[in-house]
Image (cartoon, rainbow, N blue to C red):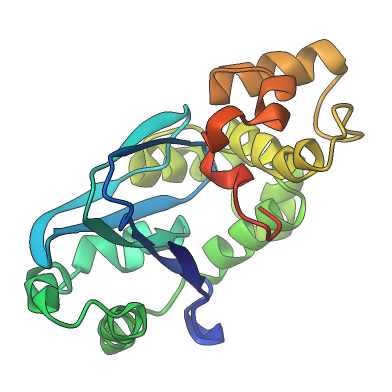
Length: 234
């Protein structure tokens, strides 16, 4: 069972969604998740008891997930601004052990949301506009245009990305371009119109970030790729 819960509008700059993945099948499952430009906070429970807590930065390559039988994962898909304004000041982690009896996604989201609001984060308007533009254009925007619109130099933007997120602006943009193409691939369109110079460039970038070709992603054998299993748009 996999379900997602969107954040309240005031927390949308920090959170893309809360999610819950419950393997009650009685057998171990294997999946692969693809880069989507988000950070991830994962809380693992097995037989109702807290097993571990993990925080992942923005991934540039696909990574495999083992989902043991009777294990439940609750997570937050975090937008980049959450690194500076939530994770670096996080008080939530010590409280996840309380979820030994009531493993509710709604309860989880309320706990995290309350902690973020308690921090009263005042976002630098330049950073908010920067990520709004990157999302709007799916990474297909020049750094000079970003700098002009955000009133922030390209050098400062690149320094921010490397310091806060551990990757360059260019790398992040490439991840967003690939992620935006998943929806088209899922629909059977293997020739996206924007973001790539030509078909060979498209295939090369997809293979770099997912480890496979667009055709194999579309085929999705054994429902391996998480982003291609949901009936909703990626």
